[in-house]
Image (cartoon, rainbow, N blue to C red):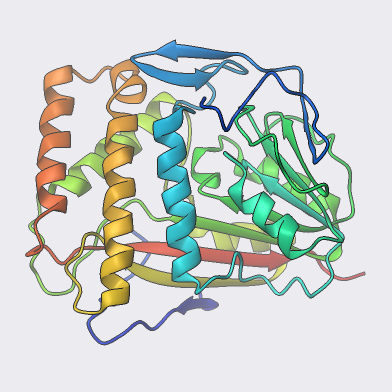
Length: 332
């Protein structure tokens, strides 16, 4: 573990880590601008495959769906992470008066909207491949359809750049993070929030063939091998940020129960949220990603069904690490 990593203490019944080296009526993609905000893009099409809806822009670049089921997963994950941080949206010390904030891979836009409400004097821009963000947004918030791995065309002097569960599905993190560094103002901050894709246990209640980890292993092989991502980018992200020129890099790690097995009510709520988002992740991966990676339906169904059963077994005291990493562009 890096020397500047911080492990967050949780109540007594929370596990501690070992190491880290290892389209509904709410969304109208045809609307380009409203009184309250804008969705600046001419890219508004979607495609349907394997019974789910996907973005059409750069089809195949990002294999996860963008339909109502995916919105439910992302919305619950957003609520879960806010609950984990006791209402906070980020941990980077950006100060009380940021002027420009960019949310890279904004998804359905909830984080960007809430940050816009928190800082009404700031311009907040959300970028994503899909035009799936709400039409009714604060006047200081805008959404743009674009691939964050393209050349940077979104201005400079940003006070804060934010990623949430995005870097693990980027092909060239060095390129993207270098562009962020170049376009932050001196002293500006970047923050990465992500969930490490592996379940741990400290009391030997989780078997070696724990089905959620077999699923995670299949997911890693699919997203890394078939799509060119690095789902365990968190392993060396602090070191990577420092090598690229960021300073004051910090990491804080929380340990989220996977399921409702903890004694603490707060942890049971968080664990239940994580279980539900995991179940939705199983459904999302079991279609387009796994099938296009060459897995047979029988193999997929076996792993998915066994993972579902394990998630509902409170005798398994598994937890999943949630990482918050932030770093600063050197002040002028």
